[in-house]
Image (tube, rainbow, N blue to C red; front, side, top):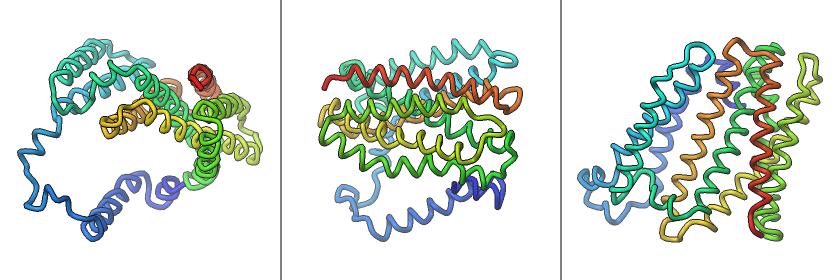
Length: 299
């Protein structure tokens, strides 16, 4: 909703410029309120930073994701097949480099040794393919097909975020009473139902229906996110919780990249209702896979 308001008031660059003000405010608050780290009392050791920050690993991961994204986005027009071997080479180099590094950006050794954790990451990436697929495609459809402004489109997708906030404490109670699987199955069923309901969207669909479908799509935000976070901490070794949580967020954006590619491919010729229905069908397939993975989890 905030993004829609910023676009309506100051055009799309405002979405990025506002982050500068937010970052500066965060920096000022951090300097004012957060306690100093005892190990940094004498100042920041730049040599330590260079040893801990895995710049080659970050660069290889960025090359892998950027190459894959560019390849996928080029498929509808002129496929850039030469990017495929480059992406594969970046992936191989990333694995080889991270296996040798003491403090890796992506702990591939932890992933290889913990299949339960890898399954959590794969499911989280799939959930975010569906989430971002909805969150990016529906506002485009509302603006281009229904003719709403960016600000109004932001308001119309508010139920997706709002119901997600409301459903989170409900998911916490369900996890406490029935376990992680119950929350994930509930969220997956809502995800599948919501993506299938998207196929009912037409240029004349009443706005109340649009809001209601958005509310259904908000349910999995709380149940899947909290359920998978709980599954993450259940699967990760206690001494590697920090690294596991960092990779968890990395896979969130892997899902975002894949959803962006899907939307770019389907809407390459323009945003229309038929394209939204295609995206909904693909996301429903993702929902089926997520539901199967959730149901297969042990109690």
